[in-house]
Length: 278
Image (cartoon, rainbow, N blue to C red; front, side, top):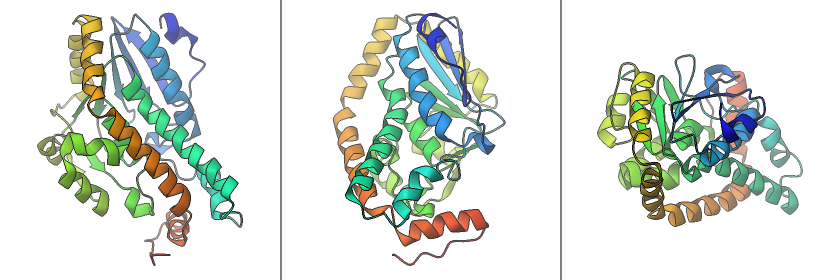
């Protein structure tokens, strides 16, 4: 590690290595399928802020371990975030404001990829579900293996996706495709991800290909590369932030539903949920 990256504390959910101007960020879990628990949401912004400030870093590659990118939000590990809102105090305004701030913190964690001055390449293998889609949507380039599978799955667990998919995907894959994927929560394969433009290419060894792309970016004039990212981000950043702010308020008001309680119970009991619109 070099310069500001050396200031990072010991990491549990991520591994960071820097070689020849390319920073590699690997998701480690520790939950099954690299599911995103409290450590991930704390460590991700710290890592990307450090890499953004590190002059030795010219591009960043992010990928998963164990054959998957990530199963998304680790619901059991994140239960303490949701539990107070689902309890007897769920109508408490102060409690709801605290929950809104929790959503904002998770949003800011994902947005650390977009804020990072250095271009970020996401290399996807295996499953990329829910919150993992939020993360790759905040990257600059997305590639996948032919075996990768994707899902904007929040609707299946009674959540309005609130960490960036609904705000960033329309400019990547179009409004119609985003609505279909977000409203159905359906799984889709790498070939469809390629046809939609969610990923720009498929590679059997997706990490090796990601390293090639990251090295190609790193070989270009660093300030020009950073300028390309900032100029392109400018086109959508205000509308993205407006949408993120709005969904904070929406979910702080409506996420605490009987349907969400049913979703969490069904997940724990390994059974299909039964939703009643309550």
